[in-house]
Amino acid sequence: MTQTARIFVPRIRSGLPLILCLALAMGGCKTMDGIGSFSARDSAALKGDDNSLRQHAESLGRRYDRNPADRETVLAYAGILRRLGQMEQAAAVLQKEAARKPDDLEILGAFGKALADAGRLTEAAAVLARAHTPERPNWSVLSAQGSVADRMGNHAAAQGYYEAALKIVPNESSILSNLGLSYALSKDIARAEETLRLAVAQPDADERVRQNYALVLALRGDFKKAESIGRKDAPPERVAANITSVRQSMAEPDRWSDLRRLDQKSATAGLQ
Image (cartoon, one colour):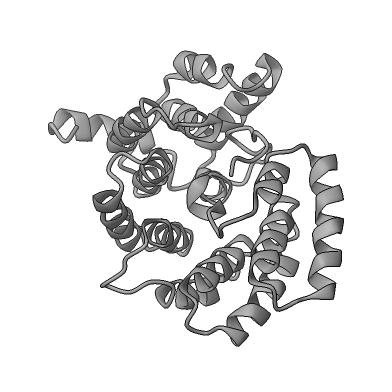
């Protein structure tokens, strides 16, 4: 269920809020990828390189064409389409299955996450709300709901979803990572750094969790430590380019230009 490693900051200059939202969208890790129980063969293929993924996607596509009502094939095919970045196609495959099985919570969860991948956030929020129940809460769905809420700008609601998910799976690194980014979007950088520091300390923390931590360290102005963390998973020249992107974004005359000042006030007030 891991993805190809991604750099922790996209090479764009469109403001820190967008950078953080992109990190949320790309850094969902298990939260956004755990969409079904695959066969051993399909699970192995999901861990392969892009060429292997494309080959297996073609095979799954043929299986899907022969029997589009086979639940395992639907989940596996949608999962590999998402890995290949074909979000709308994955959502379309899952939408048909959700229409056939409107009470299948796993299918609904997969469909909601695919909609979120495709940027269809309002639809994703509605589907994810039906993908589990108070009697059977699903931590992965809760975390996905949090990611969607963050991307829609409702950070307080997002943090509530993450906290609920953490009650089910305490110290799950992917949830802590998303929670840390949510705090950063709320301009609580000190708390974001603290949460992501806890996330990277977990045994299951992957490269995206570490790179999100590096992002928040850069937002705090600790560029040296951010580069050190980033180089564990990316070439030095790429890390340097990422740090430059953060520096440039922080220099832009927008509402993020005062992040460090606000962070200093929080520290002075003892909010860490």
